[in-house]
Length: 353
Image (cartoon, rainbow, N blue to C red):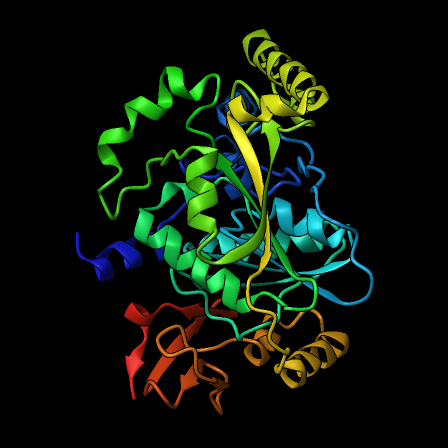
């Protein structure tokens, strides 16, 4: 499948597995109900359609002091955007699916916060240099081809604030206790398929070598054992004794690994933390100031993002069209469409000027 058709299919893909029931009146949007097992893990399978509240996990990043910008790569239905907002960050997310970008802003508002989203491909992040204080991603980048992953990492390095900015990214560990017995072998044959979204597996040593091309201060930490997406609060929402037993076993072993740090080498899921490699001066303070001023005046306007966006084709500046329907890149001679108040910052979807 060529790149354009692949991206278009993902952007406009409808996420509802089954139609919303006519009498559905739950607080949780049906898209979230239907996608919960896909985004949060198969142990949520029996909870589909029955969630009474949003399962928002705690996020293991520093509390924000002041107006700090947080980016979630692959924001899904918005759980990590809410988690970051609870730590006083201004949450910004990208996802290749337009529906996720829209629903995640609804989830933020339902939880008393405002945030921003844009449709984008992680291999070419559409943001200006040096602006994010934290770049986060959970169970997303590992689904991409090696070239997409390294392209993403190079852009993370570019957009991180040189004054203390860092990334905190979750990945599976090829040497994980459970992974090496099955999953890492099962999907090895699809690793070279550029458009496959199967999970790719690397060892901690391989991650260190890959990240070392872009970042300093590589560190990795135990996230979970006996599973790559099991979180501390999952037990509350899962149903069925098999799911609950699996979560209990995973979290118990994870806590044991925390007590003996060298055991992180066989964790199935790890967090990787790094800082910007090049400590240049942050020269985008003017654009950040414009964004923060617009955010303070009208935090519900998703198009405030235009102040910190760049053209994914050239990394050059962009502007909002006079009628507010497109994001214009003069340098690339491209116009990026806006749908549902969401910029579609993907070059294959742009029109030529």
